[in-house]
Amino acid sequence: MILDELKKNYIPRHVAVIMDGNGRWAELHGNDRIFGHTQGVDAVRSVVEGAGESGVEYLTLYAFSTENWDRPKDEVNALMSLLVHAIVQETDNLNEKNVKMLAIGNLASLPPDVQLKLSEAVQSTSSNTGLNLILALSYSGRWEILEAVKKIVCKAKNGEVSENQINENMFASHLSTVGIPDPELLIRTSGEYRISNFLLWQIAYSEFYFTPILWPDFRKENLFEAIGDFQRRERRFGKTSEQIRS
Image 1 (tube, rainbow, N blue to C red):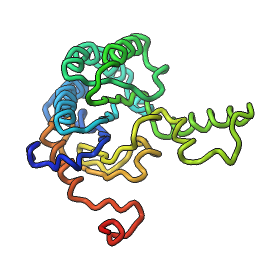
Image 2 (cartoon, one colour):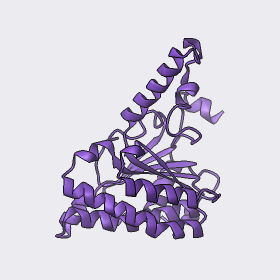
Image 3 (cartoon, one colour):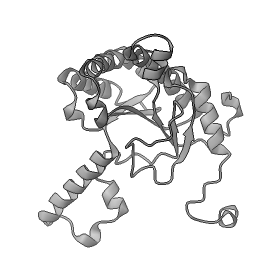
Image 4 (spheres, rainbow, N blue to C red):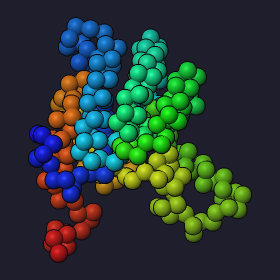
């Protein structure tokens, strides 16, 4: 699908992506897994560009989960090196395209050099007013929810919050995505049909789009196709079709 075919007045404000299939793509091409991750950077560049062109305001990419730390040490080390290189390489490009970079997750668990380059990129792009690019790094939905619970319990112990004050809005304000709207569209590549511990609270009413395309082959045209599919759906939020139409 091309950009001009999309309804400009019905673009999802926030799109989240589970970027899956780098390893399988590399194996299909006779290379080691890290080669697939390297090629995946091209897909990120294209999708960021497409999100900006289509009018998406927030794009969250699941770049590294807490479970990914359990992968072979060599692969994890290579991923961290690639991450540093990609952040440094792409910062100027993000500034040229007016993209603001943000990060969520257990960032303190990242290697110091990754933390430094990530912090520099976030600071460098902080004044940009276009697309908000959110990298989920050392992130998991369960970790995020538990961290929110701990913060609220601590406040309750200190008398800063009462039981009656705890509601959905208050809970959401303690998540790492505070100030960011919930995703309206969640995309997962590679043909897998799993959420993989991603934005568990935030995707309660997201539309899911699964594609067999492996992440290194995913491009902005595929993003436009996913948005087009989203625009053909009826979102009811628990209501009936008659209520929505009226």
